[in-house]
Amino acid sequence: MTSTPDYTTRWPAKRLLFAAVAILILVSGGAVGAVAVSLSRLTDARLLVLEQVGPARRHVQELQNAIVNQETGVRGFAISGRDEFLQPYLTGQDAERTAIGNARTRLGPELPRFSGELDRIQGLAAAWRAGYAEPVITQVRSKGPSVEAASADQGKTLFDALRTATDDLEARLAVDVDAARARLDDAASVVLWLAIGAGVLMVTIITVVAVVLYRILILPLAGLAQQVRTVASGDFQRGVDVTGPREIVMLGHDIDGMRKRIVQDLDSVREAHERLDAQSTELQRSNAELEQFAYVASHDLQEPLRKVASFCQLLERRYGGQLDERADQYIGFAVDGAKRMQVLINDLLAFSRVGRMAREHTLVDLDDLVRQVVGTLSPAIQEQNAVVEIPDGLPTVRGEASLLGGVFQNLIGNALKFHGDDPPVATLAVERVDAFWTFTLHDNGIGIDSEYAERIFVIFQRLHHKDAYPGTGIGLAMCRKIIEYHGGTIWLDTSQDTGTTFRFTLPVVEESETPHE
Image (cartoon, rainbow, N blue to C red; front, side, top):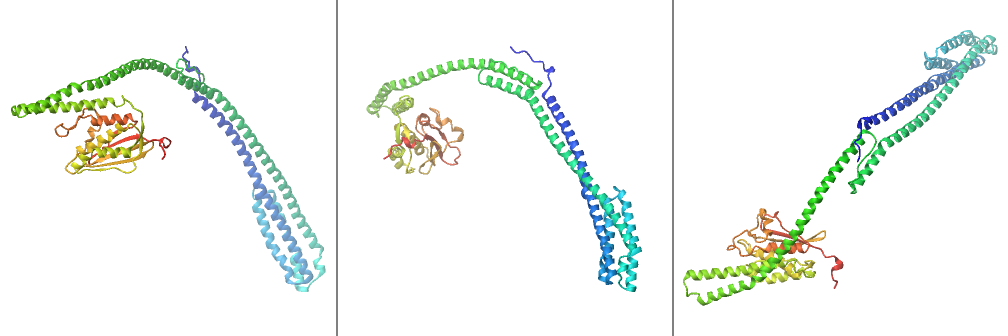
């Protein structure tokens, strides 16, 4: 016996799942936040190196080149007096202004300490031009070239001060560039280690959560599944008892309740099967006795019925015309009734023999069999100007030739019997569908309503009065019994608009069973 579990003391699976997800979110959020802060620092260091200090240093170097070009141009003009030597001085001033402007833009308000240095350099450059470059240019233009003017001490002093100021600024920027690169490397290292640490932490957390979920969810579910499979395999007496979250325990309890109901139902079904088996056995015995009775009755009735028919015929021959007209009519009724009863008993006897007096099934060439049937029916075919179309190459099947011939004779005979105003036309066709041959016999007769599609195969069921169409009502029932005895099925095809179409199937004979010529 399993005790009823206490659901209130267990966490539901939803709460466990939420707790695991919350832990993952918190850890992931912390790791993502730390990486985001480090990436921000890395971005700032990268911008400082690539967008500010580094480009500013390059512009200061351009400024140094511009100042040197100016000094070289003034010296060359002072010595030669030629205007083309003065071109570097003029372009150097434009380059100086551009370099100072670009350096100010790059350094911006974030690095104000360099703004004063740029102002000082700009002032020293202006003082050098005013105190040396412009006077030398004026002197050369008025007095001609002079080596003394090119090497004036005042100009050297001013230029050295200017050059020293630019070199100092470039050196300070170089120090800042190295410091910024060091910060960039540090920030990149921090980001790398944070990423590695976050990855390791995430893997660890996920592993822990997976192990916990496996122990509190997967293992109980696996245990429940194993117990359910045990019950499903047929051991319905074994109870279902599991541990774990509330939902799994409740599910196990519900499954165990269902198991108990199945056990009860199985007991009821077992009792019903026992009663059904008893009834089936009794029914088989009753059917066998009924079939035996039909055989014996039809067989034993032959002799007395033959005597009744013979004496009625003798009365008709001997006293025909000697009695009044009503007596002759009565004798005719007796003779006709005896003949029909004899036909009915013969048909009933043949019906009871199908499947009961089984003979060995042999290979039957339907091509020959059907043509023999058509030959047997040739008097009726000629009398009614009928047409029976038989395809060439009908298959070979396994069965009893006499019974299968009866099927074709009955169906073709019905096509000749139940015709309309036009001469009868019956067409036989066959096709293979998987492991069966499907035969189709279509005629242009009066047709059968779809509501009688099953009734026509019931023994002694007639759709017309015996005076309109003769017969005993056993033919189609006999056809169904023969076809089913041979492993096939027969039915009325109600999809046709005109005439009557019967279809039936017979198993295909494998090539290995067919004799080769």
